[in-house]
Amino acid sequence: MSHEISEGRKVAYYLGIALIVGGLLLFVSVFFTNSSPSVVLDPAGFGERRDSSMTRAFLGMALMVVGSLLRVVGARGLAGSGVVLDPKRARQDLEPWSRQVGGMAKDALDEAGVELGGGDKVVMLKCRACSKLNEEDSKFCQHCGQPI
Image 1 (cartoon, rainbow, N blue to C red):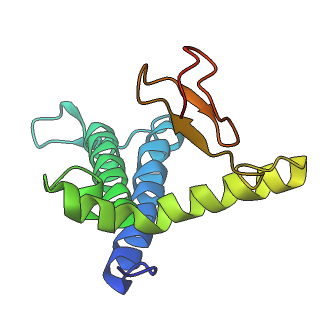
Image 2: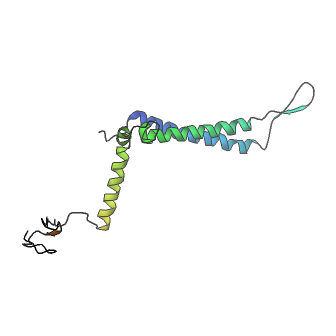
Image 3: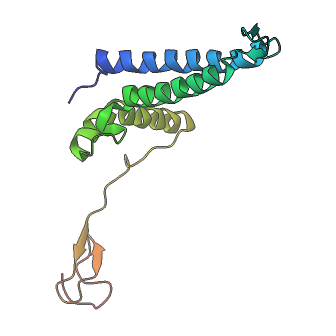
């Protein structure tokens, strides 16, 4: 199992971010250029407004959606993002992220001084008569009194 993210996924992730930024700039440009629309006169003398603001707005939104999808697929992989339904491959795609989350949780527990598990182990013996658990040094069952 690889602990690294492939170059293809990195390219898809950064390309997705670039598409999101480009789409956002294209969408926002509508608000800055809409105040001065260009008017072109047709041969009949009637004013015809030639404005591509709606086209730019929809193109900008489409670029943002495509960029978001590409960024998610680049970050999580095809199976990890749900494009391909394969649980085993999804675990492989998400392995770097799940390992990172586990590392961050361990760092937080270490910083807080919390120790999980590392204490003394307790061995319990099961009574043959009543199936209750007893401490390892017990000669008789603490529940029914039968010899262990």
